[in-house]
Every structure is written in C-alpha cells, then in structure tokens.
Length: 151
Image (cartoon, rainbow, N blue to C red; front, side, top):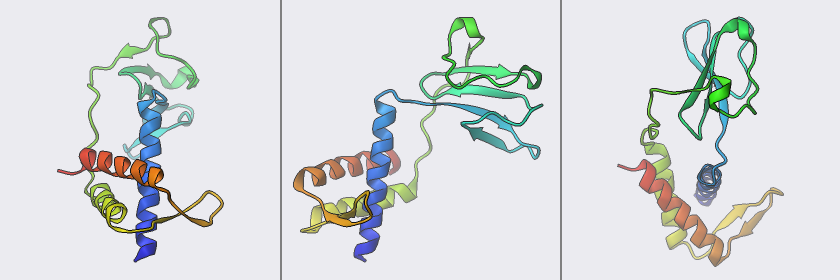
C-alpha cells in the first residue's frame, strides 16, 4: 500500500514540475500532421518527406502550414509576421478533465495530510523522507491538479 502512495506522489511531483515549466512561459513548439491512416501525429520532429504538416506553438495560437515540398521548418523558428505564421482560427482550449489524475491527486493529498512520514524515491533511486516544506509544496501541487482535473 505504501509503495502505491509513493508512486502516486511521484506522479504528482512530475505533473507539478511540468505545470511549472508551462506557467513560466517555457512552452514548446511541435509538428502536427496526419499519418497514412489519417491519425493525427504530434511530434518534436518533422514528418517524413512528402507530407503536408503544421508547425504549432503552445505559447500562442500561431500556426504555420507547410506544404510537403517545402521541407522542414526548424522548431527554433519563432512565429512572426515575416515568416508566414498565421493566427489560428482555433482558440486555445483547456484539456479535458482527467478522472485518473483527479483520483491520484486526491489519494496523494490524503496521504500527505494523514501520514506522519512520507517517503519518495530520489533521483539516485534511493528512498528519502520529505520535510515539512516539501510536504507543503506537494500539497499545493495536488490541490492544483484536483482543481484542474476533478469535476
């Protein structure tokens, strides 16, 4: 049972760090196209030759449509008026609620609130006990995930 809580706590911590990166403006740019079966593909690498695709940024609603014969657009390209990025007609949408993440965050918060000592696996693979400050940070992260993913 304790092993499950530690895994869930690690998941909350990972999600919180990813959320912080986005909140600090460290969004990303990616390629988007459809594969041979018509399934959407999102990648940090361009598609195979001969495929129409789009370059999109998570920091804005700018999209650049690229014809198959144009070649790859470097991800480092910043969307500006001069390099053919156009405002996307789609609005930035919040991702759908995630009941799995919701339930995990609630369990993690319960563990943080009710367990006298909580252990996490460190980067070196060894378990360590968290201190009060880290416990408070993990509580904040769990509450943010709950607010985001729970109904």
